[in-house]
Length: 466
Image (cartoon, rainbow, N blue to C red; front, side):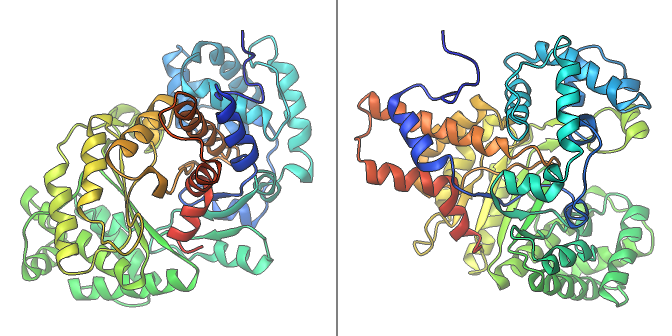
C-alpha cells in the first residue's frame, strides 16, 4: 500500500518520478492569474491564525462546510476563528475524493511542514503549530511567496483601480514581480442602469475626465489601459457567462450608451448589442499593446438569491452554466482575426461538456507565427482537480499541441494556494511518464525535459513576456 502524500504522491512510474523530481519540482512559479490582494503584499501582512489565512473568503471550503451540515454562523458568521477551524477539521475527513482533501494536506505540508492528517483528533495540535509559525516574520505574505518560489504574480484589477499598492510593491524592491491584470467587465455590465452609472462615475474620476458619450467612455478606458501598461500589465481577463457577438453598429452602441446614462433600463437586445460592442473594443485595445486576453467563460453566478442578499457575491453559490458557446466564440474571434486585431488569447471553459469545443476552436485561429498563440487554459474553478486537469491535458493532447501549453495558475485569493502548481506538475509528469512506460511515446529524455519544463514554466514566461 502506497503512503498518502509521500514524496512520490500521484507519481506512479519511475519515469514520472524522474520528470517531476529532476526537471520541474524546483522550477519557479509564474502565477499569471489570481485574485490575491496587492494591498496585503504591499503591507507584508501577517495572519494571526490559520483560519484567517485559510478559511476567510474561501468559498470552496464554505460550500463543503454547508454540504456537511455546518450552520452559517460557524462558516461566515460571528463564531470565533478557532470555532471555524474546528468545524473545518470536522469536515475534512468527509471531503475524501474531493480536491479539497488533497489541497488541504498539500497546504499543511508546504509551507508549514505538517504531515499529519487533519481531523478533530489532530486539530488542536495543528492549530497551535501553524499559529506559532504564522506569528513569526517568516510567514508574512512576502515570505510565503518567497517560500513558494513565485517569480511572477498577475493580480486582477479594475480599470478604475488606482494601482497604488502595485506601485508600493514595485518601489519596495520585492524580488517577485507583481503586475496588474486588466479586468474591464464592469465597463460593459449594463444589466442594471443605476449600478452601471455609479461605476462610470468612478471610472471618470480615475480617468480625470467626464464620460457622457461612448467616445468618452472609450477615451477613458484607453487612458486607463495606457496607465496599466506603464505599471507592467501584460494581460487582461474577463469573467463572462458567455461570449457576446451580436451584430451592431457603432451608432447603435452610442445611442444605447446615451440611453443608459440617462438612467433608462435597456431591453435584452440592447444589452447584447452593447456588450458585444464593448467586448470587441476591449480586444482591440489589448491587441494594440500585444497583451494576452483571457476569457473565463461559463459560470452561472449567485444562484441562491437569499444568500446573495445576505452575504454578497463570491460566497459559494455559483455553478456551471450550460449555454452553448461555439457560435458566438467563433464569431467574436473570427471578426478580430479577419481585421488582423486578434492578440494572444487564452480561453477557459467551466463546463467540461465543452472541452472538445474549446480544444478545436483554438486551432482555427493560430497564425503560423506565434507558437501557441491561441491557448485553451488549464482546468478552472470546478475543473481544477485531478480528473478535470487530466481530461484537459488529454483533450489538448488529442486535438492540439500539449507541448505549447502555458500551464497552471492558482486563480485563488489565498497565499497558501501555490501548492496547486505542485499538484498540476505532478499530474502532468504522471501522465507523460505513464505514456513512456506503456510504450506510447519514446523515452527521449532531452525532449521530455523540454516539454515538461516548458509547460510548467518557460512557455508562460515567453507567452506573457515576463
